[in-house]
Image 1 (tube, rainbow, N blue to C red):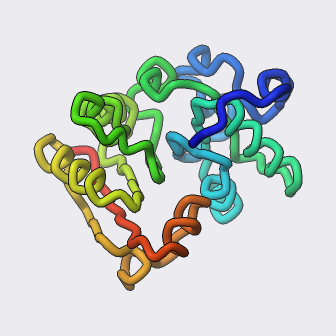
Image 2: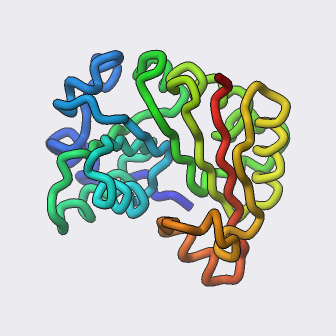
Length: 215
C-alpha cells in the first residue's frame, strides 16, 4: 500500500529545485526548462525513483521527467536523490497522469516508461489502468511519431489486458515477454525497479512489452 501522508512532504516538494511546481505552464517549452534539445523521456508512476535515477545516470544525453501522484512517495525519491550526485537531466513532477495532454505538447515526449502500475483489478476500474485505451490515447497525444512505451509488471492479468488493449488500437507491439529475466534479448540493459527486485525475489516472473505509436 502506498503511503499518502508524511509530515513535511508538501513543504519539501514545494522547496525542491528538482520538482517542477507549475508543469502545465511549460507545455511546449520543456526543452527550454532543461536548457537543451535532447530527447525527453518520462516515467509515469515513478515510485521512489530508483529506475529513472539510474536511467538518467546512464544516459546524460537524454532528459528525464519522473511523474508521481503521491507526495509522500515523491518525498522518498527526493531524499534518495539528495544522497547522491545531482543529475542535471532529471526533474520530478507531482501530478495526476490524466493531465499529461495538458502538460506536454504534441510530439514533445520521445518515450514513456510504465513500471508496476496499479492493476485496478475490478472491471469497472479498467479505465484507470495506465495501459487502458483511455491512457493510451493520452500518451498518443504527447509522443513523437514512432515514440514508444515500455511497460513492466508481475501481474499476468494486467499484462494480458495491456497487450489486448494495444493490439486492438493503432499501436504496434514491437516486443513482449512473459519472463523478462530469462529473455536473453529483452533483458539486455534492463534496469530494475524497487518492485521488480521485490517481486522477482519472490519468484514472480516479470512481464514486459514495448509498443510503438503508429507512424
